[in-house]
Image (cartoon, rainbow, N blue to C red; front, side):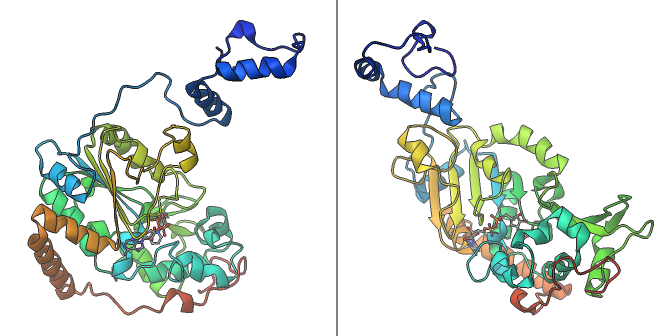
Length: 384
Ligand code: CNA
């Protein structure tokens, strides 16, 4: 059968315009009777362009004694689990006071709607930014690193690292709180970039976090000292490519991963969301989030196709969801692992240190109260 053939047919029985059967209904009925479910499945997979393994695969080994949080805990405690990857999103930082994108009422998208942007995402679109950087810098001032303390979830990741279990932490966040929590730079992949460094959009001259911060906090737009270009923090806007480090690390990490923990993400942004499907097929995956996310399409499941995504039902052999707040979920997991007190102590000690060093959470104007000028109304030299 050729790749585009319907199921159950061979190339020499392909219908052609010339060969119209004398009794079409009878012939069609006979052909449908000949089809098994697998053939129909393959045919639809090909026609609809869904992923399908080319060779039949052998059953995947189940490594969890039970598919539950307790099963995950036993796996992490076992000698076999050595390379944990954590994936995170804005949900691990909301407890620090930084709003996420999509939460109803509190998410940035909800609150940016009134700022006369062509669409909420425009604030993070590179072409819009070149035209009108003002809304982004107003928001950047609000979100700027240096005013927030890492959450318990950040310190849980640090604890995994201290225990020698963390292969890598991939974050979509741009708030640098993983760095503030003391995670070594080589363990972090900032998939959507970071405020940590900035570059001139035109001549590419690099600027430090402190240099740019000082200008943004004066409510001015940072302009290059070499040329008239705007200085943009190195966060990835829609329409920009992800950092090279993201590509490099994922190629060496994901096949080695033996436990994936996903925290505080809606798993709506690609290509990051697809990382959950890059671990080996047997690798347990734990979602710690307020809501289910990244769930495999029920339509694909109905057809027995993988298609990617988490399988959060009773059929699952490796995926577990711990729904609720990330900090609560991480504390629960730490407790079950016997690290509960250690995690509490780490958070208390580190927060005290940050406060001593003047790294204190400031009281911010809620995002919804920030005045942002209308789209297309500013130029680089304007004040915010
Ligand atoms: P998102 O699409 O806003 O989803 C956040 C997810 O976290 C949602 O499923 C929420 O239900 C969940 N959530 C929120 N708070 C909590 C909590 N305390 N405990 C548990 N779950 C919670 O954000 P994603 O990260 O999935 O989307 C990717 C975007 C968001 C990236 O491009 C980021 O750059 C961007 N972003 C980052 C930050 C930051 O750096 N802190 C803030 C806002 C947006």
